[in-house]
Amino acid sequence: MGKAAAVRYGSDRKQFMRLGGEPILALTIRKFLAVSSVREILVAVPEGSLGAVQDMLGSVGATQQLRIVAGGRNRQESVGVCLDAVSPECEIVAVHDGVRPFVPVALIEEAIAEAAVRQAVILGMPAEETVKQVSHKVVQATLPRERIMLAQTPQVFTVELLRRAFAKARRDGFVGTDEASMIEHLNEDVYVMRGSERNIKITRPHHMSLAQLYFEEESRESAADRQS
Image (cartoon, rainbow, N blue to C red; front, side, top):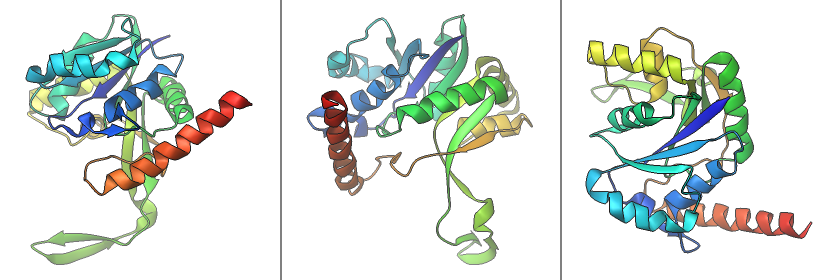
């Protein structure tokens, strides 16, 4: 079964930040290169950044698997561009944030396998704090934590289902905050797998200290694996 990972690259410069001398985006891509079922990786970037990102990712190699494309104005448009560009034999697509470099490879593999059965799978973590529904700074309700999941990526789907979701979103003028919300708009089920506490999204400067810690831990684990 052919598969593809569409790694979304945002319109900011966070993915140019480095850990251990390597761009965060490159670290993220390496996780997907380690998954044997991933046949191709598409990276959506702002049109004016194509050359810079190509140069930045030179150290990654795997030029046969990696394609960089000009994205759109938002996440949905960028993922749509990647979806249109996947190879005809592709049956499963995994959408991942470029600034989540610590997703465990085993979780990617498990999500892809699960999506082949369930059609739509996302990673999520249970909420640990009390969640309030608020309107105009006034609490409207306290939401039961056992029913709240904080979504992570990758979000993995059959190509056929995701294309149907994009088509309906275009017809309805619907813009979702993630791909799962588009599947929900299609009135199809989305299965949630438990994600990882390490699978953080590096979006703010203070995230870098935690990212550095995880990077050092992964480096030690990799070194130990090579020696064993």
